[in-house]
Length: 315
Image (tube, rainbow, N blue to C red; front, top):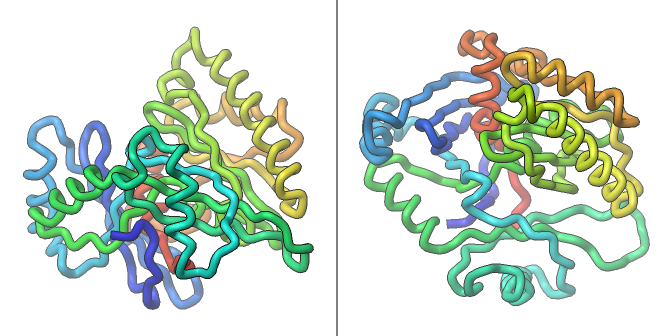
């Protein structure tokens, strides 16, 4: 199975994410005008039943065959690696990338499922070494995931990653000719992406867990660390991709008072505006009124982003 697959015209995707406390689902449709609408949301708590049983139950309740399905990997289930693009014909690209990854993985490269993401260079710029992203996950994990979904009769068409889900969201917020930095937090870490013209240019994991933003004793240190990591990443992007002007930093939805406190702190430390994303401002959530709650937006953010896939370039 490929991580990224070129698709036909979009009629809607159902994304599924296996989370520590359950299974998250989101169905998103895209109109001919490019407007996204959330069609359905569901969360199946995982504490009372094995994941396989939950998936089978979901498939029956949702009549799984009606949807095109994409599954979202967790951040600790793969590696996203920056590599220099090899100067080879397109049909030799993936073998060449695999060879370059052999010393970058902590397991044998033959045990890896690999795909690539292009990072477009500056238009009309002189030819020079280009950077690409390689996505690598263990064959065993991909096979187990395929078996899990197959046994539940969930027809998974695509396996995706959080960086691309976040990129999908950021693309809705890009001013013409400018890029957007987006920062989200999960239970174990933060994820920063920088996108431009709908393409992912930079990705960084930030070692700040969501609970640290809420803990009175750890909050200030977490804020300071976030600001430092963001500044370093913005400076790196400016050096690496000088043609990308970053218009703003957008924070993914956060529940409780962690949202406003973090936004205010980062706005005081960074040279670009800092905004908080509200999903109702960028898509139609009328069929999913639970998304009026910031806590629900935080839970479903990545899954909705994965369901927003449109068309990936085949490499």
